[in-house]
Structure formats: structure tokens, C-alpha cells
Image (tube, rainbow, N blue to C red; front, top):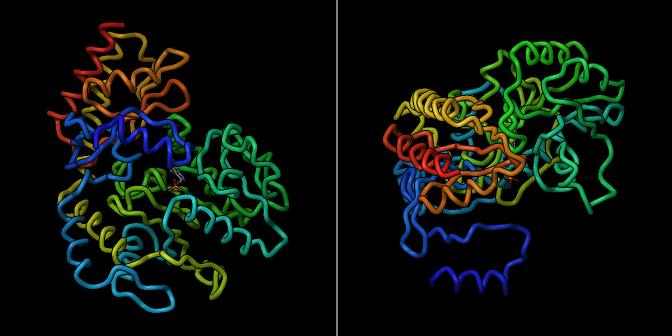
Length: 393
Ligand SMILES: *Cc1c(COP(=O)(O)O)cnc(C)c1O
């Protein structure tokens, strides 16, 4: 099928909740994808950061193929042989604790919100989140999200959420009341425009939460699995959360999310308090193990740091030549390019037509999150195409 036929069918049969580029991707390998018309692209925003180790990573495919021979789904009223193995991997790379598996980021965050409510025992229930945050599209997670446009049309919303400016310890202190049970935040804001908090802020925030017995919940849905050069981004800041949520690149392309709580909180969500039919099935856990294997065996954290520095360096060089680039910011391979324009989204289309896929968020922040396996030649190619467009402006 060609793109026009595919588009027609979408218009007839698929609910139009998304705006899409005029491209139908049919194949992917590493940092490259191909569309239905045979055009090839460098993918610097692979599946909204889901294909974090690249498309069809051989270790992910290998694990999935082996599991296909055994069993796809096991419900959670039985044991399966891979769920605890993936849980152990997550724990080995974070903090002693326990894992609940979900199918998406929003569902992981719903779990975290329920965890906080239970912890508050009905006496404390307020959760403080950040302006410009993003936590998902379910009713509770869109309420947690600090962006009004996502809430429009969905009122009345669940009670007990308030937003404060990111990276502002005073505002956070002022927002705390006797009802506050948790602070939920992304360690680096993704949809909010790649905002990295200060180390001092994070340290003070951590201390404040532990003094006041307030849960610190890190939404690592976008930052997890090496994106920022650490397996989990909280590790940059010298604070350990009470809980964190994972999804996006955890499954190497398959849908898997997780809520991870510290050991001391292991009984807050007890038997019967939370569940998911698909959560932690052996096929998605196999894929998750393939992602860990890829990162560990191929030194991808190291590559993320090196290539992140290389890419950010090249972009800053472009910034010296083209003042329309106001700022290049981020950590390792989570990079935002703040453009001095009201609307930078046309860059997404013009780069795509030159064979490079990226994203634009908050109107004027171009976002590049190439696979952790990306190499210098690919970065040269992508930045060259970007420079060509800037020249023509
Ligand atoms: C994408 C994202 C979510 C939502 O994840 P879904 O899998 O789309 O539900 C939540 N939090 C953050 C930080 C995200 O980037």
C-alpha cells in the first residue's frame, strides 16, 4: 500500500486524536527507518524515544524470538519465569525495592499516584507536580500534568494536584501543606522542553521531602534506560526517590512500563490493591531483558555520553554561526535546541524531507533523542542537513 491509500484508510477507520506527518514507516534498523515509498531516514526521535537502543536491536529481537517459542502471555495469578528477572535487573541498577509492571507510562504513573494515596492513608493526598511537566493522558495523569491544554474539555478532574514552577525551591516550600503526600517530577523535563534542574535544587528538594515525610516520585518514563548517560536520570543529582516510573524505551519497542518503589514501601500496595491484565507478560519482559543486555554488553551508557557531547558540541558550533539557535541544552542524548522563533515546528518537516526525523516541543524547542547506538557519521549527517536548512533561512 502507498501513503495515499494508507492515509485514506486512517481517515475512514482511525479516530483522529493525533496529528501525523505524511510518512508511513514500514521498516527500521538501528538509527535508520524506511517509509512505504522507499525513502530512508535517520531517526533522531525513534518512536518518541521508545526505540532507545535503536530499532530492532539484535539482542531485543533475539530475546523475543526465543520467548516466542515458549509462551506469550501469562496472567498475574500465576508466576512467569521472566518477570522477576527483569525486576531484578531494574533493582540492580537503581535501589533496593520492588517492581510493579504496567503497559505504558501513564499506567505506571497511575500506579505511583495510587501508591501515594495509600501512603497518605486518607489524611494526606495532595501531590505537587511541576509546571510544564508531562505525566500521561489518563484522567489522573493529565491532572498531574502541569499543562492546561492537555486538561481542556475533561473537567471535572480528580482532586489533590497542584503545580509549582520547576527548579524553584521556594515555590515548592510554599506549596506544601499538611495534606501534601508526594512530589512527582521528571528528573529532566521532556515534553516541557528539555529542562534540566540544578543539583542544589534537587538536593534541597530531596532533603525537604525526607524531613516532611513527603514521597519523592521520579517520572523516568522518558529519561530511563540510559537516555541521559545514566541508566536512570535521578542518579545525576545525588537524590534517591521513594519511587520511580519507567516505560518508553524499557521494552525496546514493545509496550512495558513499571512502577518501582523502595524496599521500605513494599507493603504500601498490598495484595488486591492494584493490578494489570497484561502487565509484565513474559514476551515484553524478554524484550526488556534484551534492552538491558544491549546497554550493558555494548557500553551504551558510555556511548550515550560521548555521542551526546559530540552532538551537543556540533549544535553549539551551529549556534555560533546561526543566532536563531538560542540555546542547546540537555543531558547526553536527550537534547533540546531552543530556537529564537515563535514556531520552530516547520523544521520538523523540512528535516524530514531531507531524511532526518526529529521532534518539536513547547512551540520552539527542537528535540533530538537519537538511539544510544548512534555514531559520529550519523550525527555528522543529521547536523549537516540541519545546517543546510539554516543556511537557506
Ligand atoms: C511519554 C511520557 C508519559 C506517558 O507515557 P505513555 O506510555 O504515553 O502513557 C509519562 N511521563 C513522561 C515523562 C513521558 O515522557
